[in-house]
Each structure stands twice: as C-alpha cells, then as structure tokens.
Image (cartoon, rainbow, N blue to C red; front, side, top):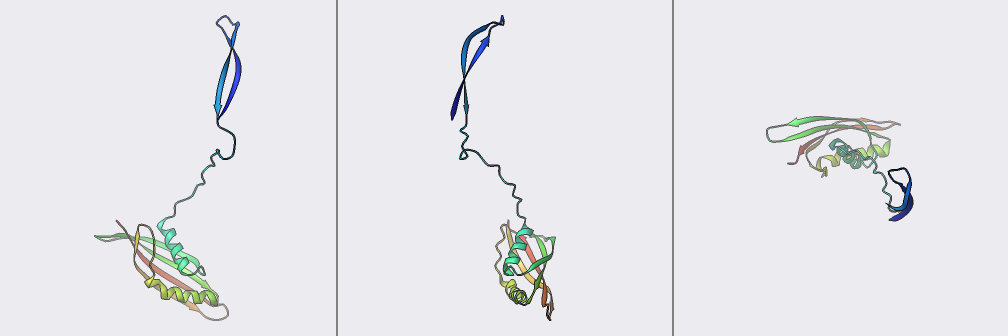
Length: 147
C-alpha cells in the first residue's frame, strides 16, 4: 500500500483560513502483479458441442462436420437427446480413417459429462471412389441424461 499525504487548509465559517491539516490517502501499489486482468468471456460448451468434439476425435481429426441435428427424446423412465451427425471424409487417407470410424463407433466409450451414450450406430454411408475419393458418414447417437 502506498500512503500519500496531502496538506490542505480548512476554511472556517467566516471564510478565513484556519490551521492546515494533513490528509492521508491509501492506494494499491501500481505494479503489474497486483493488477487483476479482466476475465475473458468463455461460452459454456453444450452437450451438442461435446458430441461433435467426441466424434471428430474418434475420426482422428480427418473428417469435416457437414450437419448436426439434435432432437429431444423422452420415455416414461428416461430423458435424453438423439443426435444425427454427418461427417465428410475427403481423400484416400481420410476415407481409411472413416472406415476405422465406422468400425469403432458402436463399441466406443464416450465420456460426455452428465450424459450416457445408450446407442451409437451408423445410419448411412455414401462412399464415392475414383480420383477424388470421398465418404460421407451419418452417425446416430442416443444420449440419456444421468440423474
């Protein structure tokens, strides 16, 4: 803490100056260590964000996200969501990663906080051969809320 002392004079009721008095002011040290930086705004990741991230990681980062549809799903005993995600694998190496993705998806252990992946299936595969090999995969996940 820094202390600053200033000398002020007080005026009495008649407008004449009276005896001077000291005023002591406390202020924080101006060094960078004590200055607080403003917190950056960080949006919360939703369940949909986490599903997309998990699928792209399972695809070894070689897929591009085309679409993602989410629908509420309810039964008498469970609440959850159904996610349909379409991924695009472009090129021979990406298509090989896509084939691994198709094989690994049904048995993959997803870790999504507050959610249990009840079912993970492949809904559709569009595989085009040739010079510009491409594979579009539609993955369907059924998530249940943990309670």
